[in-house]
Amino acid sequence: MTPYSDSQLTELLLHREVEAFLFQEAALLDEWRLDDWLGLFTEDARYLVPATDTPKADPRETLGLINDDMTRLRARVERLKSRHAHREFPWSRTRRLVTNVRITKVVGEEIFVAASFLVYRVRGGNVDPFIGAYEYTLRRVDGSLKMAFRKATLDLEALRPHGTVSIIL
Amino acid sequence: MDLQNLIYEDSQRGLFRVHRSALTSLEILELERKNIFDRCWLYLGHESEIENPGDYRRRTVAGRPLFWVRGNDGKVRVFYNTCTHWGANVCRVDQGNAELFQCFYHAWTFNNKGELVSVPDDPGYADGFNKAEMGLVSPPRLENYRGLYFVSFNPEVADLVSYLAGAKEYLDLILDQSEQGWRVVPGIQKYSVRANWKMFSINSLDSYHVEPLHVTFFKYTQGMGPGDPAPPLRDFPGTHGRSLALGNGHGVDIFAAGERARPIAHWHPILGEETKEEIRNTRARLVERFGEERAYLMCNTNRLFLIYPNFALHDIAGVSLRYFEPVGPDYMEVTVQTLAPKNESAELLNGRLENFLSFLGPGGFAHPDDIEAMESAQAGFGAGGPEWIDASRGMHRKTTGKDELHIRSFWRQWHANLMGSPNAMRFTDLSDTVVGH
Image 1 (cartoon, rainbow over the protein chains, first blue to last red):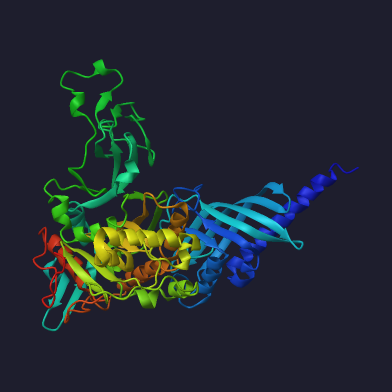
Image 2: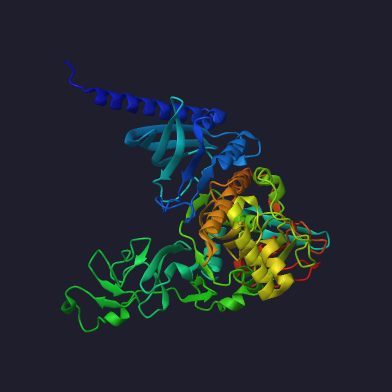
């Protein structure tokens, strides 16, 4: 006799689906397949990286590091693909470790996800680790998951010695 | 160490060069600490950061941990962040409000005016021990100009207004833009550059690199469609761009903003459709208060502005306060904040911040390439080979924008300071006159 209920199994499968989504996203970014990555967003999505001293702040009234709507995010990708984004020409090597994935709540078609990250940026003799936490709002669109909101909050006290967030964090 | 020959200047031939050891030598950095960072005025913060009695902020300036507090008497003070007993940090949180600062080690307690008000087991100290002499210690000088606070570790430094020389008028040009005054927006960009601090002083002044280096930024903003049309160019110092020496090593590069967004008074789509009216009203008001010519300077010109040695105020995409200091000869730490007018609407504040982030900051479309350029230069210095960097641009002519007059002015002051003199004999080239000073 199975010890698990249908709802527990559904929860488990949803968790597996969300993790698989995050791992696939990380792979796209580490492989610099940025156009494919852009395809994972909804049109009204936002990508946010707050300043290190005000991690919970509202970007409309606080200075952060990145606050992109889809227009700016597409321009960011264009820039990274050109030969003129000198901070990333040639591209750094990156490796994203995404762990501690938790579904914090489900509201209708929206799934709120938290995770921890370690993103290594390797370039010019330096290995710089970005340490922090992700918050995602995933939305099911025609059966597949898409990102409606993506926030990367750094645990670093400062971008030292990293200097920049020139990669997609 | 041959300090005299760190600079090579030949006015006849129009050549100005700086020896690369200036940017790599630990000995020179140590001399800079003594002769520049311990002698000049260094930026501390803005009055809006400690508005109410008890408000405090922790800051490191020239490598020294300080904290800055408005006392219950309303007076602003700065203290070395070290207990007068055994030295522990007395202020252990980046910001807040407090009546008292109690050292966590032995519970010695100071009030927010820095006075030592209590020690446990008071009778344990002999008569010679006087609490009145054991208050927190302050750096010798603290002054402010229109809300911008500067600290100096040199008791004999000239008063701040004298020190600012011709830079004062350019500070006024920025600060006059808001009738209701300014506040620092919360959120601090803290980062670093793997390069000598002086590379950032000169990068902060330099407009020669803007077109080639920041091409991806302009592609992005041009893609958003047209903003308000740029008004016709006026005849002023800066119509076609000017790089100016303002005395005492300070400098500014001033140039027409064209159609670029200026949150204070030039609308562009990046600021958001709903901010048009507010911006146009602000401009009209500035014309009313200051006249067409001064309003044009405030609204339609950009400024790359450096207060010597290491404080850049960029009045381009909003107003940024950029402070940087050396940790080693090839590494600096940077702190950036932005000012906003006190009464700005929520929509325009959002537009201002989005405009700022699109260009500036560690995640912008332009600034990361400045950082890459400085780091690449520092890596290049490691090659040996060429002994000099060149800052000759424009020595033969009356200064235009993209010339390096203001950069030479920085180096001249630096050179004089290294050799023990508070000011250079001459900041300008022999072919130019100083404007505004």
